[in-house]
Amino acid sequence: MGMLRAPRRCFRPPYLYPCAPHRRLDRSTLGALISRGSGGKRKKERNMGRCSPRAAVMLALPLICFLSGTARLAESARVFTIINQCKTTVWPAATPGDSFGGGGFALKPGQSAVFTAPPKWSGRIWGRTDCSFDATSGTGKCGTGACGDTLKCGASGDPPASLAEFTLASPDFYDVSLVDGFNLPITVRPVNGRAPGNCSAAGCDGDLRETCPDELAVKGAGGKTIACRSACDVFNTDEYCCRGQFGNPSTCPPTKYSKKFKEACPTAYSYAYDDPSSLFSCSGSDYIVTFCSNRKQSACSYHNNQLVCSGSSRYLPVVSALLAVLLFSFVALQFRA
Image (cartoon, rainbow, N blue to C red; front, top):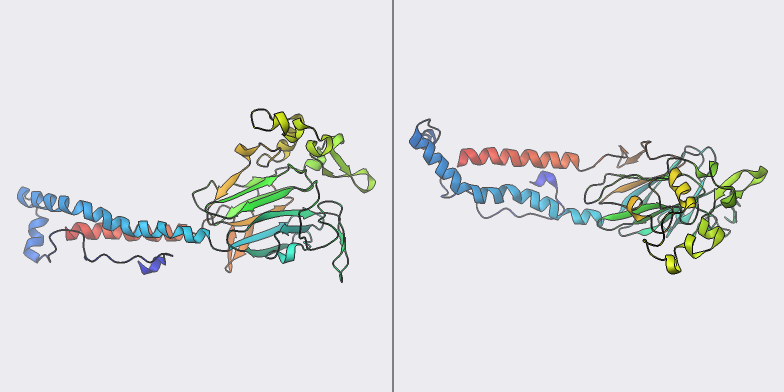
């Protein structure tokens, strides 16, 4: 089983074959076992009956060892690919951002950047728009999503901002949140992931800036809507902020504003208690975060010098090899029985 390179070493049992008694069959005995005669057939059936319990354990052992080692894979570093499919430059930010370009960088239209997050990283990624930074000092300002006056963020961005949130564990949890408002369409797609977890795409199918209610709209130059504030941020009432007597799922249902957010981003948090359709999980996954995309579009990135796209799994070849070995072992045991 060395070909499988399971993370946890599995030791070969002290017996060569699980059948009892252990003996080498000569040609005459083998002929008797495979004989069409009823006596030989009954002998073979009895012998196979004695082999079944240990054979089942022997065949299951490689699978048990393989699965028992997968928890370690969930604790490994993960690859994050951030892609800008917008028509204008986006300045992505991340907190904690030590592994993400120091917390902030620029992506021109069509550009992407690849980062490796440490095990058990927990944080958020968002995009800033209409920014201008000094090339020497790294200071400046942004139209939306600013984290102060710096390119590299050490704190969360100002609302309204569309957020991609992650907690890497076993399994991972991830979501897109519009609870603090919307400034860019954003999607999160897991790649190379596996169960436990649904490993579904989270985020937006549309651009809420195009349908934002006037009372929530943030206007930029020329009166163009550049972001959409949350109803909680605008009105600051218990009803819209899910607090006080509205501080639980049963008393804080969706509002007309959160439903508007949900139309643009069906698998994103539109308000505080939007968990059932907005929180996702996946195990051992890498992630592609894309601005100005939608959930139905596939996204690809190079991982270990191989092109990997959303919806793929790194474990299919390994599982196929494991099943082949188990099948071969099963056939071999029949002839050894």
